[in-house]
Image (cartoon, rainbow, N blue to C red; front, top):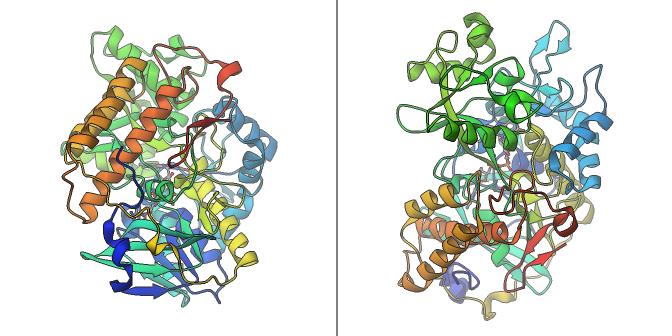
Length: 531
Ligand SMILES: Cc1cc2nc3c(=O)[nH]c(=O)nc-3n(C[C@H](O)[C@H](O)[C@H](O)COP(=O)(O)OP(=O)(O)OC[C@H]3O[C@@H](n4cnc5c(N)ncnc54)[C@H](O)[C@@H]3O)c2cc1C
């Protein structure tokens, strides 16, 4: 087993390490972390930690927009219904009510910071995405994430109580008897101990563990792994959403073609140029993402492995190049022009539903450890995420975390865990590429028990044979986190012997409400629980 407590042995000598004191540590500078930091009271001394510049987050890459029920024909109730339908019976309904009900307030928060989303004359230009029954997605052309990330980062920089620590890698979270008391970060090869009575993990998801992913490799779930080692319960790790329409650029990078393209009329075609989605689902191209992803793989197999295409030609150059500026420009670099070319696409890992289990205020089971954004498992997405609900989740729950901290904030004593017996360094693995490739084939859109079991064994065998260890640097930590999370993901996928939402088992293709209208919960050194 790879996980045996802290990832580094440095805890034995913590007294020799430089330390800094804050009131609140927020790890992650995406939409969730920045919203939290900005919503904390200005009298609190806050540090906002991120391993890369804010431009490297999933938030910065988001294209489509933010789902909010503000259209004249829309209502919170309808947003709730759509979210629950897509979540396939295991959404946490109170969390969905909070998410959708506080959506308009989240939008106002951004507008108050200066966000001016695309308008249609005087009204917001709301677009449609898969499985939404209304046009409800507020956007800024097709680079909504970049737009809001820049606005939030600009405001963070103006706040005197928020210190920014870029290029700082969260290594481990410190706990004492009363809960969380700080964290260890690596900065330019040096370890620094940040002390605080409250820590917020907003480090995003783990889709970057897959080889074919719309996320950066750095979306590797480090914060989830660190929270797990600190005793936090993880939930729903098996649910990974694959985006159906990802394009591979000339340089081999995977680039997302936003769902808003299909929302505005683009269709899928097989190699004979025939539309096929209605053969698989009555929602056609706007069926939920898991259905579209599986249909693409089935159609690819049916036609002997030939390519599937996205066809937006009928939308015309003027509309495509103006409305989808980013996608248009990126495709043009690879010599594809949407007004005249069919665009080859395939599914890619996109969004991870699983993460650190939290309540409606972002609290975890570890006292004083909070979480929000993609790192959290609030239960809002159930077994599948409704498109554009995740930027919203970061905004709504980021703010709620801050409100809770503002309300209960109190100073804590110095950590006492430093001599505790869980200070071993974990062993290392070196073959990260092999792990990523295996995840694609074994834990991808279609999974099967035999392969999952073999992969679990492969991970455990690797743990034994590679114990000689990696360097204690951020690459080493990254690799160890990756193996730890892959094990958790594969284990949860193996235990869910049914198909639901994003989790599809070829050996259990049906939904089993009797046995599995539940969540799989994993906790350090505890038996896996289903509840
Ligand atoms: C291509 C793409 C398009 C998308 N489009 C949409 C969309 O249109 N609408 C929508 O709602 N959602 C969309 N999503 C999903 C959405 O962008 C993410 O779910 C959301 O932005 C996650 O925000 P976050 O703040 O939780 O995490 P992120 O934005 O991923 O930020 C994570 C932060 O944590 C930091 N971090 C990670 N590990 C460490 C560590 N070890 N130490 C220190 N810091 C660390 C990172 O540096 C980063 O600052 C899209 C995602 C992608 C990839």
